[in-house]
Length: 140
Ligand code: FES
Image 1 (spheres, protein in one colour):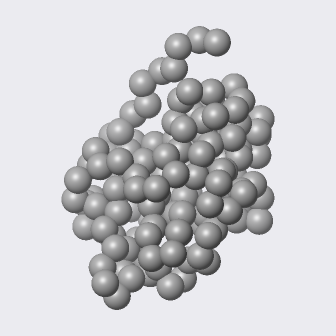
Image 2: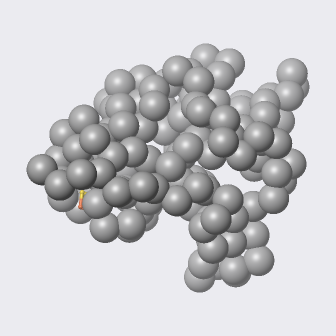
Image 3: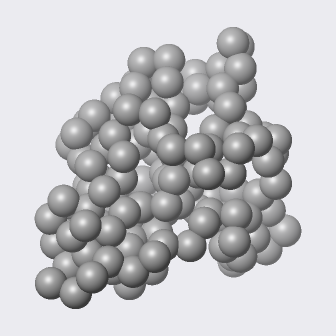
């Protein structure tokens, strides 16, 4: 297996949202599910910033919806997202499987690499914003 390549930081990707940008509401996310979100951050509908929002009770963490294998979305539409709630996400192209808690690829062509975490701040009222600490790791 080749050595894992260094993943870019979410904030270095095209059309990355600014820290503090509004993402949405926790109440709109099904508990125990991963939800696709396409944020328009200036790239228009053709070039959104694609997120995976993973809700575990009151906690929400996020990854860029970008497979470590070919850099394409794990799924382009919600109904195509393959997930085992609270356990794993699976790319629907070549079926690499990522751990829910930390985004590490535990099976497939990019084993040992990771989804790119995106820090979030969740207010008491459930409002979700892009976090202020760009290198913060996701919380399990
Ligand atoms: S593009 Fe995701 S596993 Fe190949």
